[in-house]
Length: 260
Image (cartoon, rainbow, N blue to C red; front, side):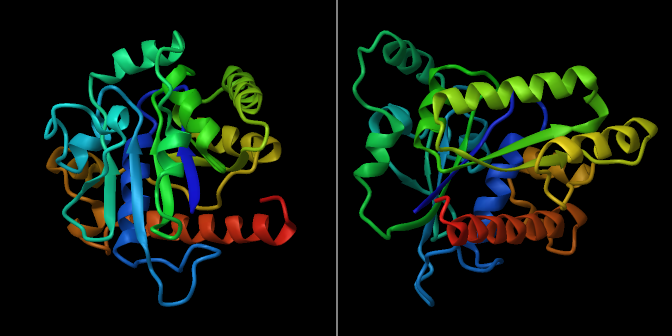
């Protein structure tokens, strides 16, 4: 079971839509198999909503359908797709975060994942809040790989410093966590983006695939309908499909190199 955290200190960079889209594409068999998965044994995908705002849970129309949020109880809920399950989050996570901080709770994401039967899921995607809080730390400690989405339209020299600090903080939490790549989202051609992108690529492992600025991303969120269901011919849908293939190749390379 491969565990991937999607995290950024910045809000509005596309963490939730990235988590949801990658998970949905894999669950609906629009990608190659994850490394380590046996042929013809396509297992389920699990998404974990680690954000108290519950945006991922709302996206999959599972917000508020249970008295206690799934991340507190460890309860796994199905979605509208047979191969895609979710551990929901909601405002109760504020209390859970406080309990984790005060060490009044022994339940954490690592323990929840340990209770899952081996081979039940191929991959787990975790949507982290835009802050290095106890919920984020919980997810990063449980993850094997990290993806950091950024927007070049808000990027600068100061942004490079922030990103470097962010990675140092992540490594302090989990030194075994591998950065799969930085993902450029809301991409459009501007003078700032053309100047920032080469600098970013010279300093960090940036995915070749970029996600364009598109109204379809907004519509997908508002309609609570995955991009692939709106149409695989849509530009952001096939860009995310291309990204998922790139992610799978990078994970395969890591495993081949023996890093994980």
